[in-house]
Image 1: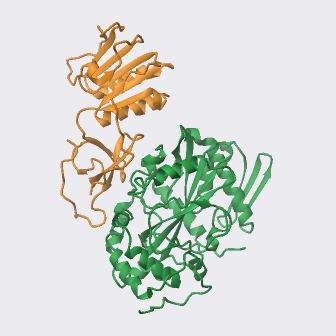
Image 2: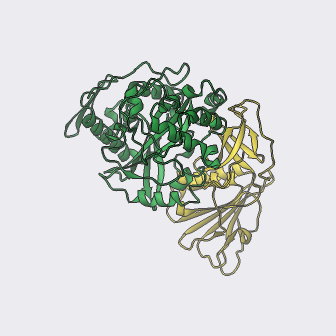
Image 3: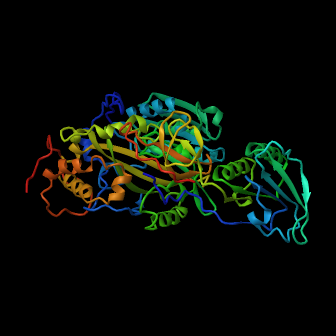
Length: 201
Length: 360
């Protein structure tokens, strides 16, 4: 049932600092060493921010300067309580930004395409926002019937949180919705469902 | 030429829909050969072809009034079937101009466009519309220009913006579609929105088609045919309403398949637009029952062979899995296995009351 090998599915490359940027902001949906998520920070002289999701209320998102490798300027580091917390702060930052910002997002697909959508809405060009996948393969699924997005889907069939339909999770991905398409699995013969498989661990 | 419209037709519920003999004979039958495989199959969209369906830039037929009414019903239920991204305003006006000019030229008995500078008056007599407006000023029309004019045309339309050596589907009016969602696909690049189509990517069909379309010239539109099969004469086979129409596929029997199963053909046309440099993509949908198609001897035989020998992945993608064998069995008695000429013209001027079994 799972239709695979669909070309709308994003293909990711490892992140690398864009030398043309005048300010860089790297966003990660989990604590990861900076050197692990992006290349080229050693010689960077443009200001660099690194925001991570710590997934705990114990952090407060205060900026902290952290020594950078090589001769580069210090990195401005912040830890956020949740992805929503980070995205809320990001929307303020993007509203104040001017030409020259380069945005980099790494994490699960739901997170990185939420970032890409905010960047697009803020007026960044596709060549100014970079994404890379890390962590779980679980998906956000857009129900084509009721338009509800169901998050954290790890199985080939998922129950829509909006209309309750059993959705086949197709490999068809919309950057606009930051989600994969879900289509009712048993629309032709109600109740006739294929076995559910764990496919997006 | 005056067209006799059939305003009481419906494409849902009781399905009050039929093709006159003339409408059957003008059907854009899509199979020039006995076997079908994906190809780019693009040709110049110039007047003239195998049937009169190819005579005009935008074909209007006896179903026009009923199809416009069906579109209005779908939009009432789901306005997201018409989407236009904000940067597409120039392309909206390009579309309005092209469709109005074409309809007024092709069907002067039904449509009139009067232009005095930017003061335009549009008369659509079949739908009882008469509006005067200022070209370029959207506030002078009752609806945004793209929605206004595509509510008055048969078939779906999308607008492709051209940038970064690619095409992006940045607007559309999609209410008579073969199972794809504009709301989900809007904003996608050429390869992204064609993502779900099997086999064709590997054959390089989309790479070649994109290269070709990026060079499409103003004044030199092109066309191609695509097809699928639909149970009942239902125009709105959208993924959005799949729970409503999906069960139709289980209602076919050997007795009713001739009347209920329809060949669905899309006459797809592509126009470069002058101001926006966008491409207008028209997807004009035709429905004909296989019982009526078999009244044209060449078409009945050929459809039998195409369905019988269809590549399994294509058969699956086109949603024919549940009923293909039954359709082949229905058509088999009309096929004597004789060699058929290449081409799609019906090669007959009248239709017998019912298809004639030939027997081997």
